[in-house]
Length: 536
Image 1 (cartoon, one colour):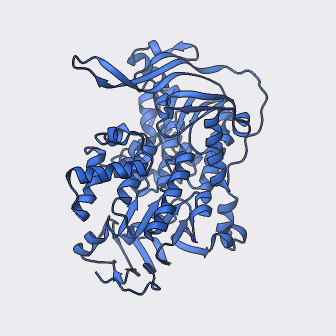
Image 2: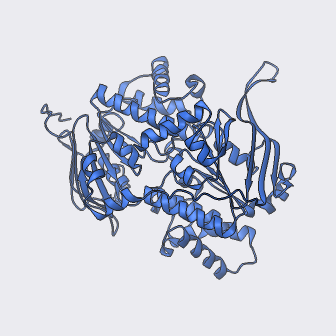
Image 3: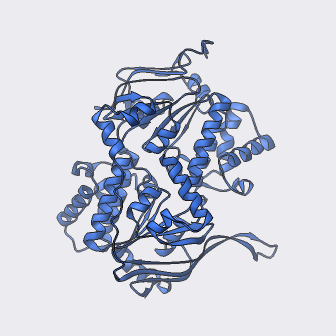
């Protein structure tokens, strides 16, 4: 490879880059430069072309379906557009690494965590055996995975969303790259780990002189990390400048729109009594992890350990806590999607005693929006087929026209065009896929909705829209929400009560505003401090 010694030349120079998929132009004449040790943030809403631009740098687009009508990508003077396989092999995962947005679909479900991280160590550094294992342990510890040695043999589905994201970061940092492309690197992380990961990236930049191309919709992260900001919309960069210029004197109307978009604070409501929709008592989900010679269980992972929660009609309980604290496990257990002990009452019906046939009758009234939209949407089904599937199961008497009309209304409610009904999930951005997942749940008009990080993949303006949508639907239909999230601004905007979880237990539970402004537990204060530090 040609590595010029002139440190004044950019590490990466993208000039006049355009990307087209068949007849659709996704990126138009984008130019940007990244110097050694510099952080450049690419900011914009879902579908603006950020990820397509990033994937172009390491030539990971689906060629020849995708092509470049114009443009050049120079890395240390070497042209990457149309580069040969040997050059790309030397660069990818070694000199340029990427943290992908959706870890569940980026990690191999058939390989252990150790094998996946060690793969690039073997390919680029020749590390095997004990040396590779020690380096993997070092990386897992670096990104905050607890009990790293026990996690070596784990598979992706055995980790929480935030833990999977940290594994992705460990893989990207394995060979200490010169350029790290981070596509929403902290989307699935709770605020304390988010702060740690951002600090880690800063430390690595200082130590290694690593450059960072940061793709995000989180303006708090941008303000904290970036040296330069490029604002994208409709495939074009419409404004660029320093954080001070962009945040204090934005020039373009789109930039002004992004900065003004934030969920409106929840209006304070009285303590009027409404019907209890869900009541959970002493819920436990324990997984055996160690057995003796005779097969008797010696220890457990206590994912949920004695959790109580009550949700009334028209009310929202926000559930917050770090990755692995038991938030998602709680949601799955409430819906009887995993086994648990304890009592679960839905409109006073003891659903913890129900058989699967009895539960099926309730499924329409109890819905969930999963954290990873791409993993929960069938790639073989159109959007119409995905959203109408629940109607076919639970409302079989509807005509095809009635189903289509119901789907069209749901799609319109979540801010997508009806023309998208014939398209497939891979044709949408991450944020758009999350809106499809919300439409799939909402089309059945449930009474209880479990929302597992429903806004984590969404840009700020769409977050505000989704929060408003959820409020409107809740007000109209008196829906009960269990809202699981690490984004405390969104939790505060939606919740009447907040429950704080740590290592399977509830450490604090009460009025939302009280929990946010005057928490009594040290762990809750730590969460709030981390969130406010990022917001500044």
